Image (cartoon, rainbow, N blue to C red; front, side, top):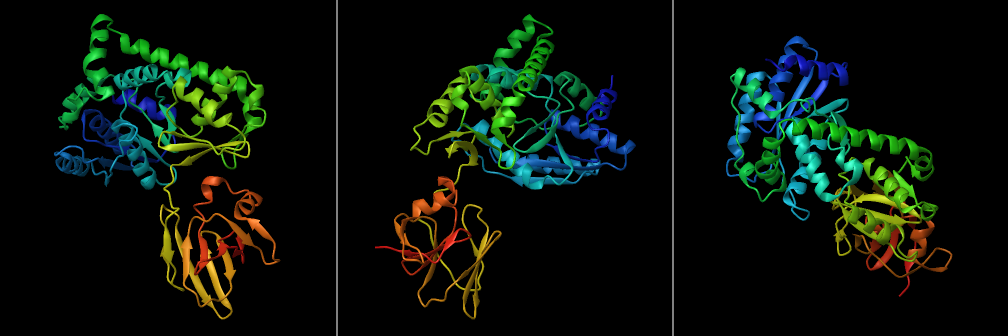
Length: 431
C-alpha cells in the first residue's frame, strides 16, 4: 500500500500553501523515501520549488561516493542538489557536533520562505525520546520531535513522523530506488546506534506496538509542556525581551525552584535548543543566574554560552579569544576582521580619516604613527577634557556586555589607544 496519500495529508495539514522546500538528503533509505515523495508531489503541483541538500561530514571513506549517489538521485528526480562539506567539532560529542554543523550549513543555504524537510520517522522519534530520558531533560525534552518545529533558527517539517521505517522501506522498494548504507550505523559506541541496534529491538519484540506508545507519550509530554507555558505566559512575558531575546533576572529569586527551571527551559526553547539535563539546569541557575553580583558568569551549553550581564540572561555564540590579535591598518584598504566580525575600512580624508565598520561610521584625526586594530585593552584613558577614567567604566557607561568588549575594533595610533569604533573616540592612554 502506498504511503503517498498519507504524505499528501501531512502536506495539506501543515503546509497547504507552502511553495519552497529544502529537503535534507543523506542518500539513506529514509531520505530517499522523502525525496521520492516530494518528487511525486511536484509532478501534481508543478508550482512547488524543491531543492535538496547533502551534508558531507567526511567521516567515512565512502563519503565522496555517497555525494555522487545523491547527485545521481537528484538528477533522476530533476531536483537541484547542494553538497556542503562540514567539519564537526567533537568537544560535546561527535553526534552533537555533527548535528550542529549540519544546521549551521543549512542556515547558510535556506532562503526566505523556504522550509527544511527532514526524513525523521517513528523509530527516530522513539530514539529521541529515550535519549532525552537518559539526559533527564524534563517534559520539554520528552516531547521529542514534532512534525512542525524549529531548531537553530531553522523551520523544520517532519512529514514522515507517523510512518514506520518498514513502511518507508516498502515504498522505496516498490519505487525501485536504491539507497546507501552508512557503515557507522552499526557502531554501537554512538548512543543512538546503541538504542537502535541493541536496546530498542528487545522492547519491540516484547511489545509489538511499543513505538506507537512512545509516540503517544511524547505527544502527551508536548501537550503538558504547552499547558505549562500557557500558565507561565504572564510571568514569562514580564521577564522576556523580544528585541534581544534576553531574560530579566531582577525578580527571579522570588520564584519557586520549580518555576525557575520551567522559565529557564521556556527561554532556551526560544532558540530551538536541545533541553538541558536537570543537573545542567541547576548549574545554570546556581552558577550563572545566582552568581555573585561582581562576577561575569557564563555556562557553556550546546556549543554556545549562557551569560549574565546587568541582571539579564543572554545566549551568545562561543566567541573566539581575540585578546592577542593585532592587525595593521592601511588607509583605503578593506580589512577582514576575525571571527565573522565583518570588514573594516579606514578611508583617508583631507582632515583625517573615516572609520567604517558594520553600521558604524566614525571620524578620526590625522596621524603619522602606524595604525592598528586590537580587540583588548585594559587601563586608564584620558578623555578630551583631560579627565582620567578606567576604560571599564566607559564600557559600562555604554552598556556594552563584557563578552562584546573584545569584539569591538579598537583603533591604536602607535601604542596609543585612540578609539573604540562606534562607541567612544579621541581618548588617550594614560601610562
